[in-house]
Length: 400
Image 1 (cartoon, helix red, strand yellow):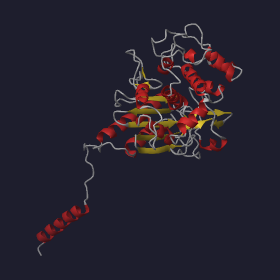
Image 2 (tube, rainbow, N blue to C red; image 1 turned 90 degrees about the vertical axis):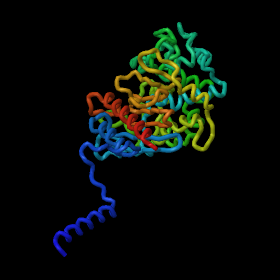
Image 3 (cartoon, rainbow, N blue to C red; image 1 turned 180 degrees about the vertical axis):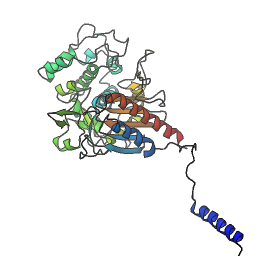
Image 4 (spheres, helix red, strand yellow; image 1 turned 30 degrees about the vertical axis):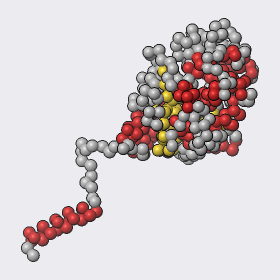
């Protein structure tokens, strides 16, 4: 055989082998990037950057739809210590802070509305007779939920700490009067949420935590969620503070909820990312549990999760929920979530955003409140939240 023929034979053989093995050339410079999908490539770098930038030592992420979890992962550790327990989205519990307002308080009010025990447009004093200060007569349950009551954001910290006990603090809350004309502006207020929790207690006839466990957390299969977590769970809880050089975990970070015994309408719930994902799916199903039981009427769920207040600037509000626009320079809901989206965030570093048009939710739980190493940990966290929401929206839109 001549050398030229031999060379052609070798070349042909190589071509056939490449085709048989389905060898794909590597990406060229400027090539079209891969489509967004619900996998680590599009989510992990975003969360890991938050850890690397010092905003939080660990995080749990859950992305999903009404009937499935599309992505679930844990990142980093409970503390900055290298030997600390790694985050597990099924096992690590977080202090949800203000996510308590939507997971428990607003949901409980929905149930009581459905049972005709609470009327949204009734004066708050109908259910809490002590709430009779100057200017409070016209404040309604609906205005508490939409944060348009005119009440201030919270009681001063020295007033909270100076209250003798939970009963004394509750009396101070009931003595509050509006700082602004009710119904004229959004003032996000923990006082509103505490009053809502008290309405649940008085109209249901049982403490808020007991009502939540029996009516919400249990039926939704939120296995480890609850107020005042028992000692056996403390090793699984991401700490939110330090005391005498040691991490503090399992005690609610919010001073108002702490003074109220760890159970309040504004804060106090602990849960895993898996737990919060189950709640998000319940909301996307319009009030139906995973096993098909209806706990809330679909009409009531829509009423509470639809934007009812927006004054042209600032944030939009639903009933208990935040709505878009969020009023933030860098929105925790990102830039891609639809106009009917709603969600909530928590001061400790937690968030839940839902886009009903895409049938999509994003849960991010962090302990941002624990010894941040970033100069502006909250700003970094908001960037992470927004980028995750955008990545999830892009992945959803890329699906066939």
